Image (tube, rainbow, N blue to C red; front, side, top):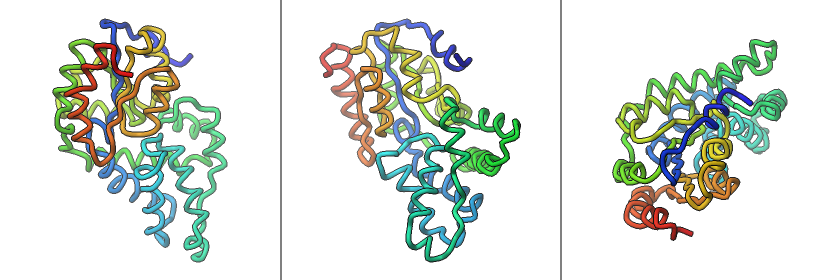
Length: 271
């Protein structure tokens, strides 16, 4: 078992309830700025998609913002986006060469921690077919660090976190790199309101809950809060409860969580 999984397994309960909370698009209104101003420009730049930039942008936003794959890890997102782009007749008509994804998919099939650290190690071991993807991923992180600042939590997030930590162990469960999570939660002084931050380096969201919470709390006392289908899947895979932060209606979602859903969860009357 990896060191990251061991960290999650070593997590010790201090309360009878556990709440996992996604970050981008859930706690922070950061999905749009990250994908439109950071991921998409680097997608176009690093994979030579300038001749079809309009379609590259449409595809990237569809995969990451406006479809059932919203919120997935960047590497399967990249594979999906390149496949969709390759299939578009507008791209085919322009005879633009779309990069192949065979090496990426082979790596993803055997690597459980899809992050820059494991990708760097893979490239260093001699897998040069992934070098361009590693450079793209590093460039994305640099763009995020340079551009994404001053994005506060949604209204009532702080109040909900206060309510949660009074009765539950709380953890950030995300597929964002942990450095960015620590920066964003720390910048807004809410990192002290949770017990741990788990990013992409520690595995999938399903694995986060599986190792940190599932063996230690009763299933009806585990709640995952998120804005994407992957958050729902992570909860249900561990027989946990789920609360949606609905895209486009985030403020109303947090209001209802504060006014009603958390009380029902702690009263064990949620389902």
